[in-house]
Length: 81
View 1 (spheres, rainbow, N blue to C red):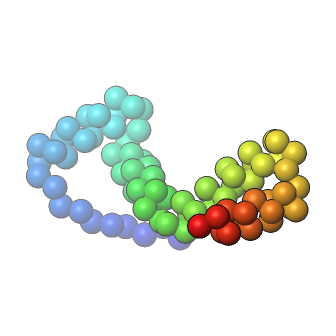
View 2 (view 1 turned 120 degrees about the vertical axis):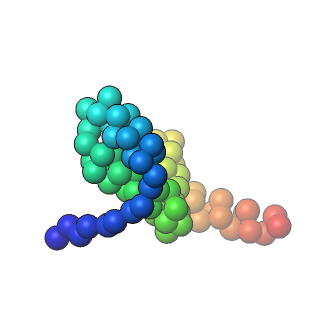
């Protein structure tokens, strides 16, 4: 279920935001949802970490690394500190 959020901005900013949104072929509500979703995705540290692990995993798979290779690299990195 969707919920409403009320924000207060000055008239000039509202008009400019609506105009720019229309130039992108979106309503102000669509653009605001997009901006909020992007902000939450970037600000949510757990999502950032998950995305990082996914990228690391994809690179490792592409290079043919095995679970043993990953375990070895982690051990070597930890012992070198």
